[in-house]
Image 1 (cartoon, one colour):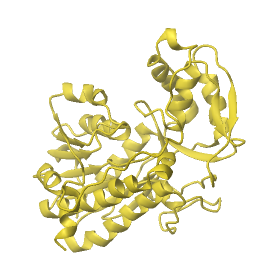
Image 2 (image 1 turned 60 degrees about the horizontal axis):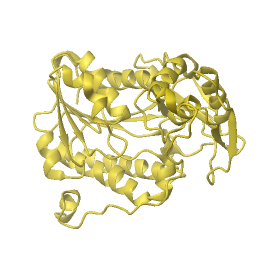
Image 3 (image 1 turned 45 degrees about the vertical axis):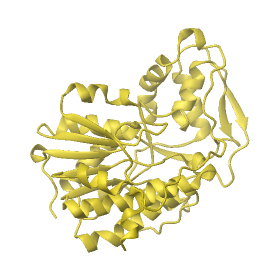
Length: 356
């Protein structure tokens, strides 16, 4: 199947469009697809926020449906006459995945399987699946290319790898074009404070020490949300059929260095760094080889150091001045185990499985 011309796209469906990455995707596609209307599907779990779409709604070109991507009937209806689907829905927090791995399997793997079946029913020309560099695991320190084996080392990465395997097993059966993006840690506004960078920024804003696991030597890669959205558009317009692309910026920093950069960018007095016990096997990540994406004309333009002052101002503004020196409740990095939400046989999630 051919790539799409942004000017000719009429209908886009974005799953998870009220979340951090999804809402930025909506804004970016509105700006670059002038004739398109966007349907957002979001289950409104804890990380979603309707206010993320305030500017999008003001365009009059966005509608939203609350619902689960695992509901086959609902998703099939949402995909009617769609030209493009961007699948950004799912669970994404590595620490939370250790507490409730079943949620990640259901949302990320089985939810993707249902979406692909609905796409096959509707004969949608193209889907972009937002996966993760976590599917590779730690690597051996050398740059990782898209043909490297998938060796996830946590439940989140495993659920995203499972989703990719389900896609691989279904695209030929349905004759689909599903292109996969594997980004490193995406940074930007609107991110939930359970994640490393916004957590650091909000804690710095209220004068709490930044909790660094172990000695903070774990290396992480980053890409700005603007660069990620540009990569998505590049793959829509120039990508190869059913291809996979790594997405990463130039930043490769250890967590301690990230904490120090946050303290430099923070507004007002700060309390330094506190070292805490880390999670098991909290290993560094290898860099990604982004040559395939760069061959399409994409280049990362943002860096963590460049965007941090703006992010510090944005996250700091969410904290009232009166609370800056008071203890503020911040979500734990490793939440306590929560009761899993299950769906019985016959529900939307498993309907497709029952038929086979």
